[in-house]
Length: 341
Ligand code: UT7
Image (cartoon, rainbow, N blue to C red):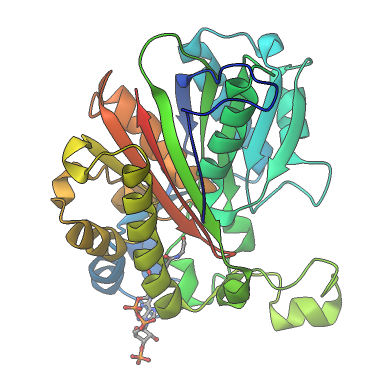
């Protein structure tokens, strides 16, 4: 696991600047698919889904809402709250595993949609951990003084990659996007520290196996359903709990804090049972966790981003609160970020 904090100095000897969140936004598609709707599609029940996952419903994007469209809507909301114009952005980073296409990047497509003509754009792929990966990457550019305004987005249209006949996965995921505008922060601590980790040895447990260079598109590949998301749920569950707990403890140790200092935990919203297990192992009451898995299911890279935006807008987290964000996803990838709003 690698770790960074805001106490060091940049390579050129200049002081490292504090980096803060200037504004957040999110976009959830209008269409709601409930557990009851899923009972019509596969052999499942509201009771099974809710008791095993905590999910009651999820949002599904319309046909003309690709990932870049969801991302652009979240971005526009974040820009408005930050009071930043699109043409002031110097960089756009999009975290997604469901890009509009293999290339160009979804970030480039978002740039065009929102008119951010001065931004350099790229995607970062870290599955459900993606939002903390883009947050930390953006922080590095701003902390060193290279940039002043960076837009980060987690956006997914998972419904395009779900096998709607596979009850072990189709009940879990949803569509949506969350965004944040970052910049240097004079007062307060902003993003205090991050840890991130990856383990490619466990890549096979959660992936979309086909459609890339290893298994290019072909009729046979489609017939096998290799273009759909596949997951070994139980294995993923175990690793998710362990990695999220370790990352949380590590990031707190870096800044000499404990869970008692944390006002709110904003976790990746994969499964209520994972979040309860993490809370129990960290010895924190679950009511200190911000939870929205019941309404949206697992939105992968968008999940923590949407939760952060909601928690801020609802006043669940307030200025000077210490917030712990913690994520886990395919790769495997994981991470934790501590921030003071
Ligand atoms: O976003 C990052 C990563 N993703 C996650 O973190 C997800 C991690 N994993 C999980 O959340 C859970 O493992 C699941 C929710 C995916 C599954 O819960 P589980 O308690 O681990 O169930 P299971 O896979 O062990 O399956 C138990 C039973 C099986 O039947 P048998 O073999 O015992 O007869 C499944 O076939 O439940 C059956 N099952 C279902 N039954 C009704 C699986 N899916 C369903 C379903 N409805 N949708």
